[in-house]
Length: 197
Image (cartoon, rainbow, N blue to C red; front, side, top):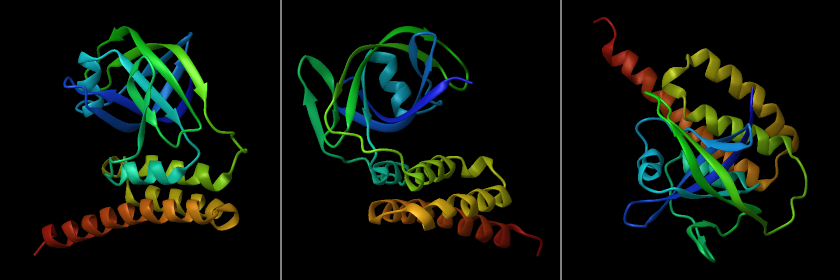
C-alpha cells in the first residue's frame, strides 16, 4: 500500500475562486496523486486547473469542520502561485498536475511538488488527533458501512480521545460525533418509518 498524506487541498474553480477539501494524497513512484471521487467539486476544478495547494495541519478541528460541511477558513495568498493555502497551516506544498488517468469512480491526477514551505513548528504526534482524523474519514463513509462496524470503530477510537485529547481534540471529536449520531438517528428513523406495518 502507498503512503497517504492527509491534508487540506485548495483547488480553483474555472472562475478562480478557491475551494478547499480534506483529501489523502497518495505518494507513489515520485508522484503525489490526487484521486477525488466522482462527482465532486475538487474533481470538477482539477479538470480545468492544474495548480493545487496542499496545506498540512495538526489542528484536527479543521478536518472535523470540513467533514461537517463547513467550508469557510482563513486563506493566505502565495507569491507566484494561484491557489492559496490555509492561513494556519504548519506547511504547504505547491503541486502541479503532470499526468492524468481516467477512472469511472476515482480519476487520478499525478502531481509533482513545485515547492514546499514550512510555516510553524510541528510539535510531535498525538493519538487523539489521529483518532479524530480516523473518525472524520469514517464519517464520510457512513452510507457504505454497517452500523455495527461504525459503533466498533468509534468505541476503539474513543480510547485515544479519553486518554490523550486536549480541548481542541475534544471539540473536533464532538463535531464528528454529532455528524455520525445524526446519521445513525436518521437511519433508525428511516428503518422505523419504512418497516413492516
